[in-house]
Image (tube, rainbow, N blue to C red; front, side, top):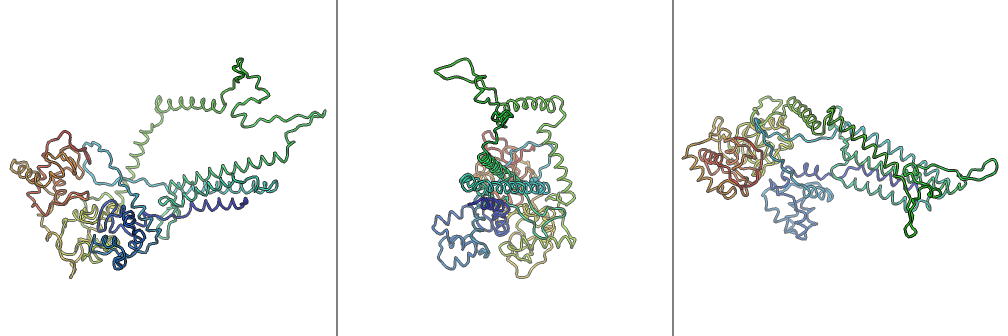
Length: 581
């Protein structure tokens, strides 16, 4: 391969970085997330490990047909796994337009998914419990794209330099013999790095499509990883450039062997003494002068030279001393600058102020405790758009029900108050409805909740599910519960607990499958109403609902008994936030 071929290979390697790799996460969210949840069953089964399951059954090739058209595969009868999987739900999976590579990307993303670790419990004082989401770090795309421009310019300059040196080399000697395998190895390294970037599915450069970019937003989304990749590629090309320069100098020296010879006026020929960078950095003594640093001892014919420490090492040592003095003075003596912890705390306080300001300006402070029913038509129209995008697949466009229940009748499973509907949509349910807190902001949740409560009854809709309620009927509103303290009520609550709860929480409430109920750490809130809601409706983490077994009084009795449990030494490790009752 000639030099131009090498240059072209480098160019193609760089183009690989700009290629949009297949995004398994994006495909999952757009194609599958309506029915499938990560790490657990939903309307559809958990897809984690499904590829291995089909391969173990010897039907790995049928998996692609299953993902694209499950109904046709089941009807053909050629796959036993497809028939078994189809029994999970009476609702068939709709056909999907996916290539085999896209199916692989989705399954790779699902298999690689791991739930975020729970944060360590932090003791709080005089702070009300909150269900607000953590603020997720987002790259500074405006800053990144400026850096990206400079790095592209640096790549261009280095390419031009390599091209100029290569043209000069061609005029001196044939490159094929001189460069050989070394150049090929360098090019292969750059190519390998480009392939690694292509295979990366989560950090590929992405262009904003028409209508997607916000005002003053960059046209190209450059992640922090992309900047890192460009820096590494620049470094690699710098080494390539230095290699070409060294090759040029070596060839030039071989073609001009007398360039270091000096002829004096009297005809005496001497060799020019050059001070090389290597001599400056290492302080090495020429072999002709080594007798000046020879130490006066010898052992078995071996002599020792008294070389100085390398100057570069000595300079760095002096620099570390200067740095240490300056650092100690600035941060620990005069306190004229923030330490890392102080800088972090100040930055977090400032950013939290910006977050709160943004949330307040965009109605993002709405939660179940303060959400109100919207009646404005423009807001309800926005809720309708959200409903048709996210909810119609399970509840049908008019809310008459399909996989999900009928939303237009007077029967409600999880409550019909605006705060209850808001919570159900936000957090999902144990019966298959996915959470939408990660997809919709609080203002959007309020809009779609209000739209649902404004739906008109649809004739011929799905049969009612849940309790039939009229407006004003508070018998099913569990947010308002009374803490019972009488011995009779607590004894009745203990009986209910011993029959229904000890299998998961143990007889003293110390926890087993379920969390410890005797410490001061609570996952879903510690108020009597919070505890009653959890017992009545269950949770998405596996606790079943008990609202169909007990009336309001029995729920209050067992909830009050749970809150009266004394601490138990040696119980299960705390889960959730630690609070003082």
